[in-house]
Amino acid sequence: MTQNTPISDKVDRIETIVETLENGDVSLEEATELHEEGQTLLEALQDDLDVGDGTVIEQ
Amino acid sequence: MADADLSQAVGVDLDSDDVVTVETLNDEISNLIDDQTDLNHDYVVGDVSGCRDSNGHVHFDLVFEDASIHCVLFGFCRSRTTVEPEAEMQVAVRGELSFYEPQGSCSILVTDVVDMGESDYSQIYSENKQLLAEDGLLADERKQSLPELPRTIGLVTSADSDARVDAVTALHSRYPDVDIKVQHASVQGPDALQELMSGVATLDEDATVDVIVVTRGGGADKTLRVFNETPICRVVANTDTPTAVGIGHEDDRTLADEVADHRFMTPTHAGEIVPERASLEREFEQLSTTLNTAYQTTVVNQLTAYGTSLDNAYQSTVTARLQELGASLDHAAERHIEAKLLSLESRLETAYQTLQQEIEHEEELEETVEEVLDEAETEAQAKIEATQRRYRLVIAGLVLLVLTLAALYLL
Image (cartoon, chains in turn red, green):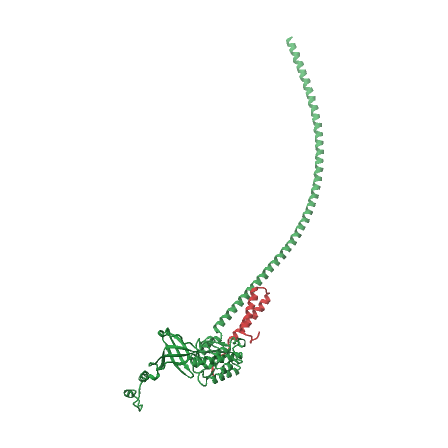
């Protein structure tokens, strides 16, 4: 996933990661990798929230 | 009709004696209308516009081309009329012309309504809609999705209108960070069509604009008609940038609404094209918590499983080793016991043999003793018998002596 990936796709991926972890059918190493991927996506989502300065430009 | 006293009262020299207040003018207009019988017609024909129910009375505008007049059908007259005025109807109304002095407005107090069929504008509206439909501009398939989170919104509206304030406020109340580029356009009047089209086109060429919003506040139906014109509808429909249109009040519908990718009801509802930042933050926070909980649970479960496996492996190893040691110990003990038993058996055998020898020796001794005893007994018996014989001899001698003595005595 890239920074341009839609927010909904990132959210879907995180929910898939959560489901995978909750199913419990992953090794400790895989769980750590999935958790790191989820954290990276959450950071990207936080970055996505900062869209601008809220300025109003009269043209 | 001039109010000479007022000309002095205002304190400013107006260089005229003919100065009146609004109240006086409205009173004069009212009198004029009341006196002018030529203004009373049997019916007035026009299109119904802006029809609304208020406290049981029906208010609407009677429109013909660019002219309109306000009409009121009071509640007590509604039951007497066979037809109730509705939008898109052309009607003929009978009633009394009335001047409302406080507002200086003229109205027809309607007593009867006759349905004249579909309004002229309704026919134009239907034709425009048909043209747009034939070109596929009303089809849902061609509508674009709005961006999930636009960075910059292009807003086409009247720059000094309440609609502009409402739309900007609504957008920023939900998402304060979003930038808004406001493209001014008249939203009614002769310049409206051109300025609206130009505004939308300009924003569509701006690569930074993620979504174009066209909006204006409510007004008489006639003032909204520019948004039913096919040129503006085609511009809105053919933009590369997604569009959202919200015109008038909740129940106002225009063709621009229908060709846009998204319709919102009023400028106040413009905020719905952006997500609520606080809600998104809560959702992400919840996702983060859920992710961490799932990870922690997985890690704990995995570590517990590893611990259990480790314990089991340790237990198995220890058990096997202990079993080996036990077996070795048993074997060693067995060998030790066997050796001990052999030793004991040997000792026992030796002791037994010694004992046997001792028994045999004792038996021999016993036999010897018996023999000695027998010999001693025999010898003692012999001595006793010898003694007994001697005693018998002595006794016999003594008896003989006694008898001799007795005989002697008797004799």
